[in-house]
Image (cartoon, rainbow, N blue to C red; front, side, top):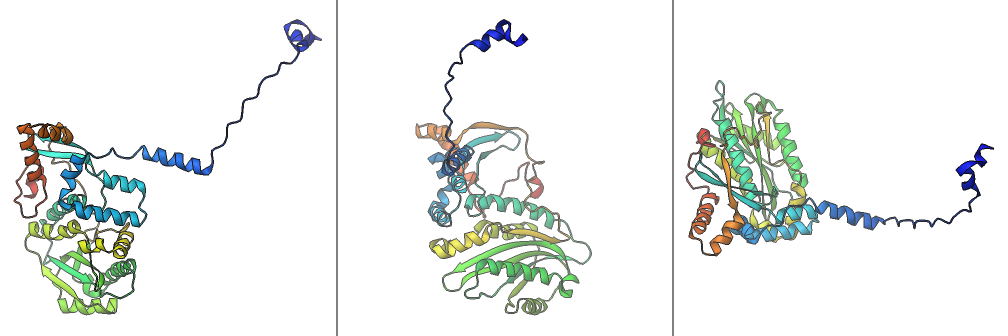
Length: 351
């Protein structure tokens, strides 16, 4: 009875008005959802590199760089990885430190193992850390030695299988009495070579800390473990600085250039090296970070000077100051293993 009185009751007596229905939104197809996801992923891509930035970082190896990119495309490398490879060196900022009295560059880097400048940066870090470790005197009668283990090439054997066998055999070698009674620890650096005649040739370079071991005994033990390989090499290490640069060069040079001219070999190398640890530690060296970047010795007064593109634009316009700055940056930052290194605050402890 109460419901039929007042405004509510009057509302019940009014004729029902037609309310237009909203058109249901079409559900996107799976193809459209994938396209949207790809577009969102591209939002996180690095900014495009300017031609001046690309030239400054890659002109020393531009021909090989294009070959490497072609082979990366052949193995269906993701667009994200290709984009980072293409834009390596972009957004380059020039900085100056009054404390160290030198310039440095900060930019977006791809960190691809097949990128020569990124490999050189990795080798520099490895060399510095390894040198610091080698300058620590071993205990007792132990010494530092350089050991190389090789595998005999087998025709038709996939590269990844050869790499797995190399590391598995080295793990077996470390369990033998010969190794356990003489060696304490060290680090390994992986190197791979290729030739059209014999194919791939992977081997390990080992910086070992331990007691004396006869090369003949190691060769015999290695042959028994591998079943077909006996070539090994043992050399004493005397100078920490030369040793560090000698070992790190294997990280710098990567595989030889000829492999990038052969599509089949290049594809196999890219696929086999994916996720592969080029350098590692074992034994008493466990926990020692070969690629750790120690910033405790860095200067705190780095100040931005200008973007590299701005300096290049002013240099092209005729600014002599910027032209001299570009020449100085090129000469001081171009990698040269024979160039004398000037001690600064960040590297004076390792000079």
